Length: 175
Image (cartoon, rainbow, N blue to C red):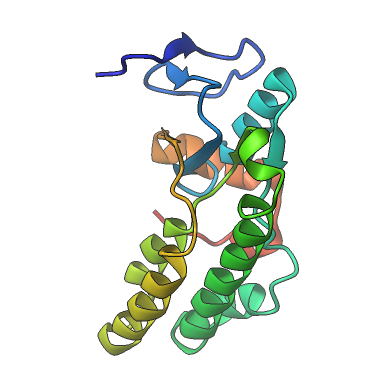
């Protein structure tokens, strides 16, 4: 099933995980997926430092809709999701389609598909349909990850990690 991959679990990564992470640096684009607080950024940083790859971290802190979304989800879900989609697309496009990208392995703490997962949970049916049309157009122009690492952790662990990092707009996230 994982032919060609070497098993690797970084010794500095002490977060809860159900299984080993399979990494082959023959892959040029490795991406992470998982719940909020699962450790995607931490693992991406550790793997990138260990292997000396280029690192792409999701840029979300400056999104003006994020704090508004946590105050009024119904009103701000659609602009938030469109904003995230366009930001993720632009960031990935700029790096993955550059001339240097094919020669240098890249590790990202997200995929463009992440937008779709959150949109499905946050948007009305008509908004989601429009969102999917836009996302499909964008996804066709980006390379797919050669390897996708999914991080899973129990809800109590996710909640603890969200509390520890202390982002004000995440503090009221429910189960």
